[in-house]
Length: 93
Image (cartoon, rainbow, N blue to C red; front, side, top):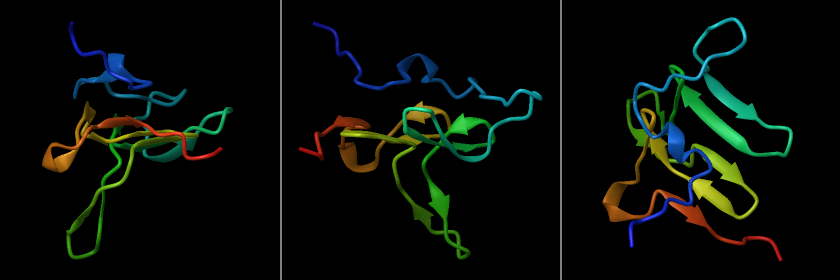
């Protein structure tokens, strides 16, 4: 049986799928949807990573919703250390 992603955005799992605003500018920073899902972008690509002034990478989810986390890097589902990139955990009772 093939693996099926739990990603909300699995169809966007490619580094050339740039998300743009209504003016055609690549998205940058944090966007929150009407249903409260947080999405992080860098240069129009889903990417949760941020960097300290010294250049150290801080890995955080690119997509956060109630009971759902997704780790993306440069537009592709990714997680270091072999951990799952898309996670559903029911954090709230």
